[in-house]
Length: 326
Image 1: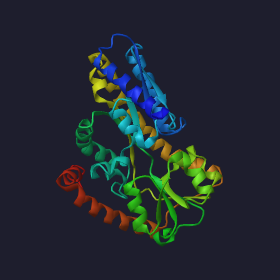
Image 2: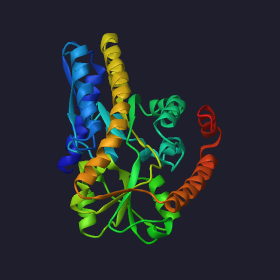
Image 3: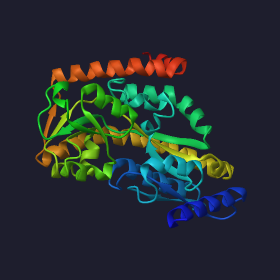
């Protein structure tokens, strides 16, 4: 057996033993997150951890491990599920292969801003909580990324300009977006984006200005074209059995801190949406609004993806759209 599997097995065994016991003393939980510490999502989570420690008088502390330093992003959900780590954060849309409900917030132009994005979360949260509960995961909170744009070294005036470009993707939904625009889907994790551009593995990506700032996009790409097509969310979950083993006071403190973190996170996202694009421009990137032709082309792609999604999601998906007023 290799060292890494042994470490994971021992960690899971230790977590299982902990869950069988009734904690009587102060405890520290590890939390795995995928993004750099400077990212506003992680800053929000670090404040959440401080709030939990203060509310529980130090009985429950959370050690936040940012930037994939503890568990790789694709493995965070299952690591929390099996108790390797008690808590974690991941992009909700990464679960698109498990259920179409998880990918709704990544469909282009399914919402037109933060107001509708909040309606989407309120409408879909009970369904998502139920699905994740079946996997021993309790939802704490979710926070959207700022709206997005296309990063490229050449102007993108229409969808046709994407044809043949290697577009960085990160789940099945963005793979489909690439396919429908004629681009070549190329899955790359956030920390690997600079190297992927430098080696020619990718030619373009669609992501937020916030991500662009966190990875110093100006070092490897020249243009940011704002398309504002979706607000994908990160979700924070806790191992349900570990949560249930907490005292009632600790559970309440954790959930109250989570509610505060969600509200704060949405505010940070909206503020970051304005600030990050300015930062890109300050570093001599060309920052511009998408042309009407590009927007129209992407809206057509979004409409096709929504039609496909309705068929996959069935009545469960229609109920969510109805609750959103769609």
